[in-house]
Length: 353
Image (cartoon, rainbow, N blue to C red; front, side, top):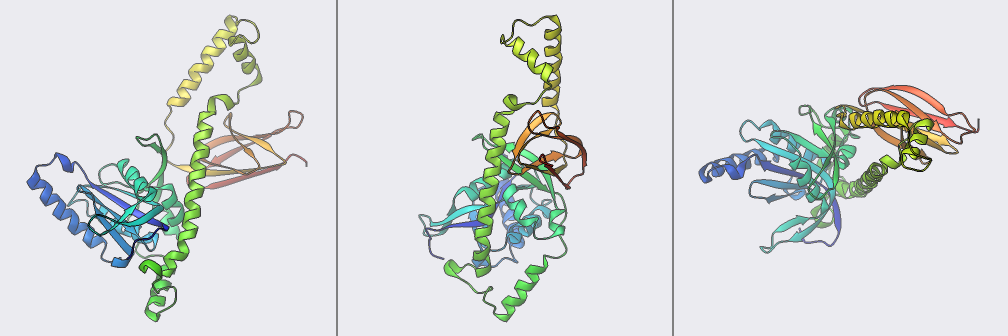
């Protein structure tokens, strides 16, 4: 494979041997040999032209140039052999670039491999975590794959960059998706999709790359929106009108607060502190809200966005109160919903009707 100036979208598996640097040199050698055997076994079904392996000293980074499922099944195979070598695993789907190192060997650089390392760093020993971009692509391929993942929430790395991560909690599926079987048949028949294109990549992988790239970009935009919303949380928090008046009084906008106002503010602040300290549930559902011509979306008393465009939120499973608010002269739409883990709930409202 020759070096390319093109940016490719690939799946990257990053692995790390737990507490490798704390072991004596002799034990490090034994661990690394066992790790190499496990990784080689896990990659037996992946053609050499579809993968690039980088030795990181205390682990490895494997870039998969073909199907994203190759990374999933290889990671599951290594995780299942964790009894021999304790490892942490992280998988990401993102942009990378092929370059040659000082030894003339093919190397990989780019955000795709950097994020894979960050995702791996959040994992516990024996745990396999994947990024949101990888989850969104693979979970769409099969219902069996969707059931493998559990949303773990947001994690912040040392560069203060947030990452939505999902843990792989299921075992290895007995079969791969139907499309994979069809591709194998095409490969045996010498079909065009199975043939190799530029840089030795399968043409099917090259066609999938643009779709994956747009998914990655979309995930980045969504993450940026989450950060902006978090920064404006205190400013946009929706509270009852009387309390807003008391807050303005406490700030010196409308006179000085009295005893009643002070007690009310103290109770409110304590309630907000308890809410912030509560840990979110492990399971989430998805809420989609459409409002016409426009409306503020309020979930459990907090402003979460404005529609249009549609407001899409991952909210903890359970009961929630959803309010869509327009002009004060128009009645708000208030609805109670019970969201189950993995469920999508859609609410539509037209204020003109």
